[in-house]
Structure formats: C-alpha cells, structure tokens
Image (tube, rainbow, N blue to C red; front, side, top):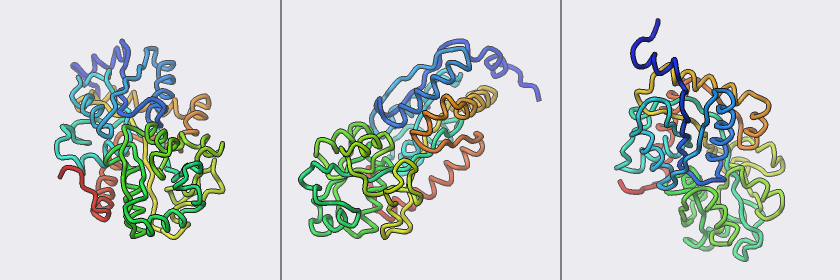
Length: 314
C-alpha cells in the first residue's frame, strides 16, 4: 500500500536535518554510551548528524516526557532503558507519559545484566567476599547496609529490593541521578553495595570494585568467575535491563520502520557491534516485537514491585 500525505512527504526527505537523541541518564552511563554508539553509526549511514541531549533526573522520566511531548516528525527521539518505560508507570502517578500511548517503540539495542559490587577499600565491606557475607552482614545489622541505584524505581533499585525481600533482610536504598553517580558513590564509600552496570567491569577487573554476583541467571562473559545471584541460593533471581529507542506517538510508520532498519544495520556492523558488545548482549527487534516485550515486562515488574512492597508516590 502506498502512503500518501504528510507521512509520505516526511519519509521522502527524512532525515533532512539533525536528529536529537534525548537521553535520560548521565554521560558515561550505559544508556548514554549506547546512544552515542548508535548515533555515530546512524550519522554515517543516514547522512545527517545524530546529537545527544542528556536530560537527567526522575529515573529517566524528564527525558521521556520531553520526547512524548515533541513533534512526531522523527527529529526528536528517546534513548531509554526499561526502568523508565516498564517501571516508572507502575510507581509514579504523575508521569505525563504512557509507555505505549505516547511513544512509537522503534527497537531495543542491547540487553544488559547488573553486577552486584562492593568497594574492597570501604572499611564497612572490607571483610565481605561473597553474596552470603553481604546478606549475613545485613541480617546482623538491620537497616544499616545501604545500596545505591540510578534513581527511585530504577531496576537497580528493584534488584536491591528483590535481594532484600528474598534474603529476608532490611537494606536501605539510596537513589542517585544515574548509574555513573551511583558508581562514584560506591567508589567513595558512601554506600555499601550497588547493582552496577557493565560500565563498572574495568573497575572490577582493576580491583577498585569487587564483584560478588551477576543479576541474570547466566554469568557475564567478561566476568566468568563471578557467579550469579541465582547460583548463590536465590534461584528465582533474574533481573536485567534493555536500552531501546522511541519516537513520539504519531511519528509516521515509514520513518519508524526506516529507523528500525538502520539501527539493526548499525548493531550488526562489526565496527559498532564490538563496541555494543561491551555494553551488553545485542538485542534488536521489530517495532511490533518491542511493543509486545514492553507489555510483558509491565506485567512482570508489577508483580516484582508488589512482592518487594516498593512504593514511591502512590
């Protein structure tokens, strides 16, 4: 079927000006890094510049709201993680965006595990060498062991809350404005542990951070000696996040489909694939497949939030 009207006209010249990637997390975070890799590849493939606009805060909600309210012409896009899309709507009552009503999902890019890490130089955690040691410390000191996250409602938050629930311990959550600030706090000794992103792997390999567990049931290929949480007594623990791209609702289908095709091409280009593999497992899919994934995860995360009794402002 031939498209006519504004959508077709837009597709015929798209892109004819720079495209903005709005990112809800800080420079250096996994989401920001993936956005820059994909943006570089799209710039080369599509003949226009893809620029990064970091709008941090509220677990990515500020960036998501910005794109939800943008003109649906393909020139303002969101690069976000699953927390902003499949957790925020379950915790915040005044988001001003709905994950499926206000966006056209384009594609996921990578799927990423977390790595539970401590600072071996922190005197509070210096004697901890395993997940069991950490849980035992929390059991002996209810409300004293702290964990950081990239923000209230971020999947780092849910992972820590899930561990506390499963281990029947009381741990204190400390939110930050992104993964990079959380990691900095961990290095400074301000918190006891965190479910870090893969950006922290070099720090773990250098010994500045000590990895205790991987959040997915499978171990991470770059940390083969680090067992999963599931292997260490919590077989149902399995948490990861994805980074994906979105356009405002109403963006012409041909523009969304073009972006989907080009993102998949970048992700499969060896030049960019190698960089993306450092951030996680490459995961691209059709817009329809992405929509179904969001629906499934909204259901799964609602159950997780209920089990962990997480409440923000509802």
